[in-house]
Length: 293
Ligand code: SIN
Image 1 (cartoon, rainbow, N blue to C red):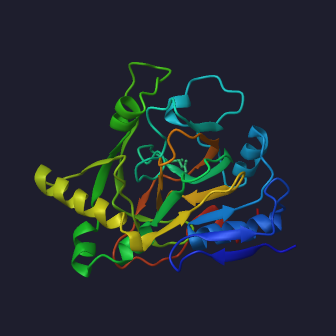
Image 2: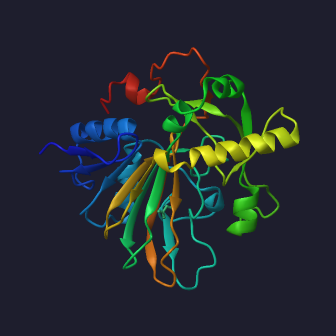
């Protein structure tokens, strides 16, 4: 059976039907991957509940599994499989601020694949925002100003002070890396405005106050409602988002109810700058191989 793709908005998000991710074949995956590139986030309902190993196996179709900085150097039965759980005991909820997963890494994740096994009776939606739409909507003057700028993405504040993760090496700093503000997506070739409120701390080479004001403008801009879609979860639904061109925000409006599942992310490339006048030819191995994987 051929999978069907039902876009949620003209800019971002599509619901995929007619495929079981635990039995997906190469041809179906090629279509699914193309839909992922075209819509930035995919939603699949009525899926079997994946075991940790099935989840990892599906993720490996996208590429190498990403290990979260908080899990590095620690033994794991299913490396890269992250339990997500928020309940009445939680002090913080994962993803409750606009972000691109672990954008502070040198090679931040491309895909993140989340399956929720338990959902609250109401609430707990996840919102997604298109960084392509955010770039496209900038004025021509702003596009010129941002061309060539880089920004510092740091895990220090969220990982040390918000989530209070314990690293295997307690003396080490959390990842900090400089990434282009305008990033070329390797599968679509399109420019994306790659900043997020969670990890992007400063713009390189600008006076402090100017950089701060610019970042505040960019955060508000990428979070505009007109670049978004919103997913209302059902049990065992799966969301697959592209961190290279979409931010997400998990709503924690269901306290004291429980919401839980598992996420596996996939390593991406070190972000590459997109410059005005660049062509938009895809450069990834998937595109190059015409998705014959
Ligand atoms: C996250 O991965 O940032 C959390 C997303 C969610 O729980 O909806």
